[in-house]
Image (tube, rainbow, N blue to C red; front, side, top):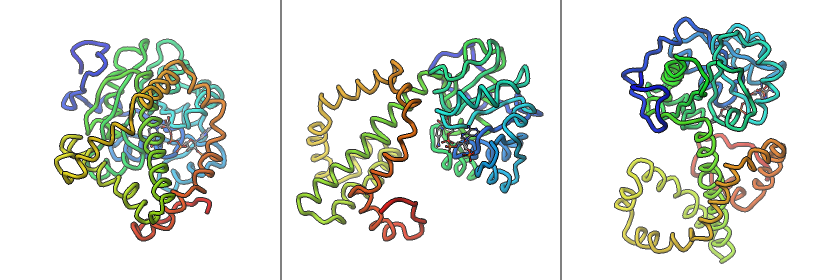
Length: 340
Ligand SMILES: NC(=O)c1ccc[n+]([C@@H]2O[C@H](COP(=O)([O-])OP(=O)(O)OC[C@H]3O[C@@H](n4cnc5c(N)ncnc54)[C@H](OP(=O)(O)O)[C@@H]3O)[C@@H](O)[C@H]2O)c1
């Protein structure tokens, strides 16, 4: 499939050369049927691949897999019968589950697969030498991957293979990514470490950290200055989607051409005052914490605090305004559960 092995980082995968052959007649165990495991499992079935699901006792997601027509076993039994074992567990739960329920039951030649680089990049799991081990990381949230594949398409994705994996693992990884729909939007070669760090940097600095804090701060400042919550919500939150849709589809330069001259001039001259050198320095700090393992250690030690942090955010002014505005803006959407 590639001119040279291992392929260089950044190499684009030519979908014309990808065959599902390496997966044909093989059984894939999806261990963990949460957001990403469910998307992989259902997409594989749609692609004609045999799937079993591994769930712990009393698992609500295991019950869902069963209700959706998949064969569900204990993690040990699913692993024992599989040629490919996909670990679709929370990143912080991987090490223990692997040690207790996965590794002792793996067939000698079974391949291990991941949807995120964390477990391998930060040594949570050390597969025995020579075991095929790959990363097929769709660059989308699980439900979006599921929807895109059901509609006949897919999303972009990144692929990696550990250095001591045997010949054929790249072909297996590409077959797997094609079968779950994560080559349709473009597939590129990376490493477990680069995928993990770039993914977490994007989440923290932009997507789930920086943007959300920007919205909360802008909303608070407008409301504190006496502007209506509805004005602040429309301008600082609701319209974000309109702009990100333009950015997503047309790029930053295309977006500028499609907004008003006032919005363009104001953004180009005021944006750099918000994101200045001091912000860029803190972005570099966050990247350093990812690279040197500080964040990985903190996540493993303190992930249990996430729920309390999210609950505290849910009592804040922006979340409260969202609960008032969203039933009007999206009457068709079921409200998510949160504190009031
Ligand atoms: N969510 C996304 O959109 C997304 C995007 C990119 C990459 N990923 C990656 O996909 C992987 C899975 O993440 P996720 O978000 O799909 O997780 P998730 O929604 O939290 O689901 C985790 C699944 O693992 C099961 N589980 C938890 N602890 C377990 C244990 N000790 N033993 C057995 N089963 C256990 C849960 O089942 P129970 O019902 O038993 O709790 C659930 O089915 C991670 O590597 C993540 O980084 C996810």
